[in-house]
Structure formats: C-alpha cells, structure tokens
Length: 308
Image (cartoon, rainbow, N blue to C red; front, side, top):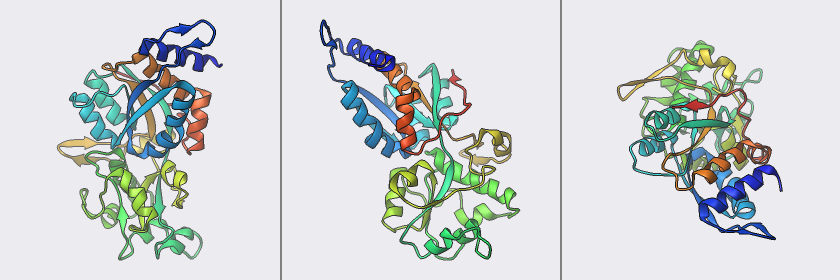
C-alpha cells in the first residue's frame, strides 16, 4: 500500500467514524465525496476517477457537472455545498476564494482549446485537409454558409468565454479583423449556444458540424479535432501576456483570458475535509496523474496555487 493510498484510507476512516481493525488495517466503511466540477470533465470523472475511488478507497463520488462559472456563483452564494470544487481557469476559483468558501486551490492539470468536428459533416474532408497547401484554413471553413457551429454560454461557462477569446486572438494572429463576429455572431448567439454536456453528444450524432472544445473532450470520445497554434489556444502559460491582449465586456464586467489550468479546492463547508484534501492530493500524485493522462489531460506544468 502506497503512502498516498494509506493516508487517503486513514482520512476516509476518520471522516466516516470507522474503527481500525487490528489485522485488516483501516476499516473501509463507504464514505462519499460531493464533487462539483467543470462539465468538460464528465468522461474523466465518470469513467476514470469514480470507479477507482469506489474500488480502491470505498469512496463514492457524487458528482455535479456544470459550467464552472455557474458552479462558482452557486458555491459563493451558498446555494450548493460540495466537498470539492474543480474549476477550469482561475476565474471561477478566484470567485470562490474571494467569497471565503475555500482557503486555497491547487493546480491538478491543464489542457488547450481545439476545434472539434463531426465525422458525419459535409465539411469533414475540408477539416481533415485544413491548412495544407492548396486547402482552406480552419477559420475559412468555419465561415462557410450552412456551417453549424456550437459553443457554450459565456455567462456561465469558461469555455464559452474562451472560444470568444480564442477567436479574438485569431483575428490578431491571422490579421483577419472581424473574424470572431463572422464565425460566432453576437456574443450571446442562441443558435450556437448549448449546455456543455450536450455539445459533444450533438457533435457525435451529427446534429452540428463543429464546436469549441477542450482537447480532453473529443480525444476521450474518439472524435476528430483540429489543434491550434499555442499563440491562440490558451494552453501555454508562456503566452499568458499575449493572451491578455484581448478582452470581453459582459454583464458590466471586463473579462480576460487565462491559461487553461484545472484547479481543485476543498470547500470550507465540507463535511469530510480530511478525505476531500486527500482526494485532491491523490489527483496530484502519480496514480491520479496517470488517470488524467489516460483521459488526455496535460500536467499542471508551472501553475502555482491560488490562495484567498
């Protein structure tokens, strides 16, 4: 038994009020952890993390998947009380920390923004050849008449903000003024906006042609996607100052992009703070990182902890 696993089992036993057995070691009475996490993490949590927690640690993960910004607002206002909150980008986590709902947040992974596309769309051939000599650039394809593009709500989900930021960065990078407007329409475009868990399902079923996505989403589902230059994909902290050159006014606030890092925090109202803390440490340890890699997440790189 590794140190990390031993420590986790000890915290679970203490949190559950279980008794230590003299021969078998720590009793493995089932405990539960309520985890609120960014909707893009559904495949990882359901298919990778939750089964291991149940099998190896007798811990049931009760997940709530939703846009991280919407979750952050509910946590900050006291509407929901999870044990652990996992956010994509620092913005939602900063909101929770500022509200005094957590003391610190640790980086557990990172990713990048891509353009996912359906294998059933009439644009498949064009997407596969995008950028090759004699073929259209990816953004030219997205401008085609009849293109059905999907994204999430920028008022509740960081990915909804990030695709707008990425298109604004693409305008500068490719010297194409007005590119974001031509592809996305207005910031709140109800013809394109869907709840985050629905986007990949619609893409897989051929109901839409292309969408914004974090690399982890289409990779986990075997869907094709286009990688983008690091200068615009929000996945490289080395370009953080370049990313900061664009902004989006929304609901009376100016929003700016930040690198796509996943942060995890134990909430102050957690009913099992010890186990919640060990869960986050497990995600950061080799065993947890191996599962994250299996689901196409990159490491946290040089991201530092966030503190209230």
